[in-house]
Image (cartoon, rainbow, N blue to C red; front, side):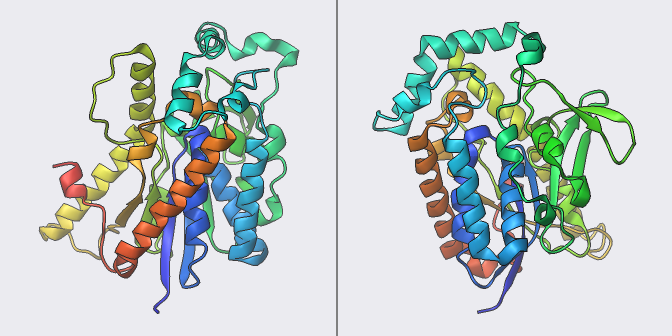
Length: 349
C-alpha cells in the first residue's frame, strides 16, 4: 500500500474537541499514513500539541497515549468556564447526549452563569481569577511540542489590539500561546505575554475569530497539498433557531466557521482559475481539501456541552470521531494525494 502524506486542520470547539480526539485516534492506527503538518485552534491547538508531542516522542502509539491523557485530564475537570459547578457529572446519568445537552441548557445554574458571563467582565474576579485550563496545558512536553521534527505544528490566536491572526510555531508555542488560542473573552481574561515576533507585550483572544483553524500555514512548499479538515462546528442546520438558546448556539457556530469558510472560498477561487487555465498550476499552490465531520451528532449538542466536559458526551464524541474517520478511510483512502474529496464548487455554488 502506497504511503499517504497529509496535513491536518483541527477546529476549535471546547469539549467538542473530543470528536477530533476520536478522529486522530483512528487515523493513527493507519501505518501507511504520515502527518506532515498540523494547524490547530483552541481545542484543536490542544489536540495538535498532544499529537505532535507524542509523534515526536515515539510515534503513533505515543501520540494516542498523549491524546488519551489529555482528554482524561479534561474529563476530570468540573467545567471549562462555569466556576464551582459540577453539573456535568450529574447530567452524565441521562441516556442520550442530546438529552444531556438540553438538560444542561435548561439548568437554572447554567442560565444564571451564562447571563453573568455576558454582564460581568472576567476581570471582575481580581486576584481570585485563574484560567481553568492552565493546569492541563502546563503538562505538555514542550521539548517535543516545539521540536523541528515532523509534523510541523501551527497554533492560531487573535491579537486583541490589531484584530489580526497570529500563528505560533516551533519555539513560539508555549503554555501562554495555547491558552491564548482558546481564550473566550466572555469567560477568560485576555492572555498577555511578550510576543517573540515583535518583542512587545501583546494580548490575545481565541484564534477561532480569525482562523478556525488557519489553513494558510499549510500551503508551505514542503508540505503536501492534501489538507484534512476535522470540523466540529456544524456548517449546516435545517431548522431556523427560535429559542434564545438555539439562536445563541447557531450564532456561535456561524462565528466560529466564518474564517474557515473564507479560506475555503479562496481555495475554491484559485482552483477555478487553474482549471480555467487563467493561471498555471506551477504559479500558485492549490490545496486538495478533505473534511471529516459528523454534523448529525453536532447539531444535537450545544454551547453548554462545549464548556461543560460531561464524561459521557466526551466518550460519545470520541467514538463518533473514530467512526467518522473509519468512514473517510474506507471511502477516500485512494483519493488522498490524488484528488480532492470535498466539493468546494458545490459548497460555494
